[in-house]
Image 1 (tube, rainbow, N blue to C red):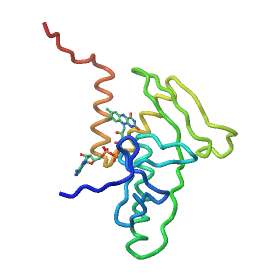
Image 2: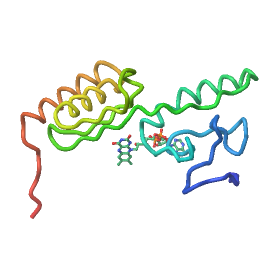
Image 3: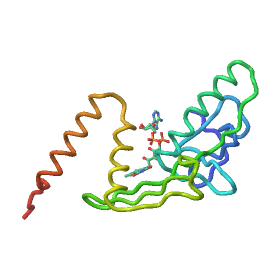
Image 4: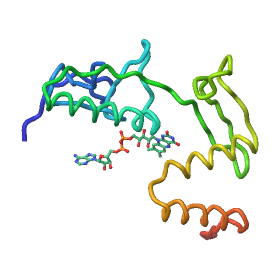
Length: 151
Ligand SMILES: Cc1cc2nc3c(=O)[nH]c(=O)nc-3n(C[C@H](O)[C@H](O)[C@H](O)COP(=O)(O)OP(=O)(O)OC[C@H]3O[C@@H](n4cnc5c(N)ncnc54)[C@H](O)[C@@H]3O)c2cc1C
């Protein structure tokens, strides 16, 4: 096996605006594996970032195969959702999701928890996955946690 000497920051491959590593057309990286700077700051190692980058990388891969110019990635942060206990959460939704809003929408409590849960469900693929998770959530809401007492 050959190891390549590639630019890294904290174990992440440094990529350019089109996800190319070291300017190579045959080596692209996204998600946790990639160090992507956006507006002077590195994008976080979060699922949202990886999910947003994936279609952009796929489009550039097609461009490269066809010999077309690649397109620079434009990061559109959607905001943050954080679960805070059984029925509470914090939410920051980016302004562009609500064009009439002057700034990001920030809220907490049960409304944020509902948005968190609905968002989570919609991210899953397939009715079966969504149905089984929803059932699991309902069961866990009405039952106590299963814990064992280890002597
Ligand atoms: C405990 C934990 C909690 C987290 N919680 C959150 C959260 O609440 N919200 C959030 O946004 N993000 C969270 N993250 C971060 C999130 O999981 C990652 O940012 C996201 O999964 C990155 O996606 P990815 O596709 O880049 O990498 P991954 O999801 O890690 O996928 C990489 C895949 O490549 C496979 N792989 C690795 N090496 C090889 C190889 N040599 N050959 C073939 N396959 C290989 C791996 O098995 C894996 O399936 C959490 C991470 C951890 C560890």
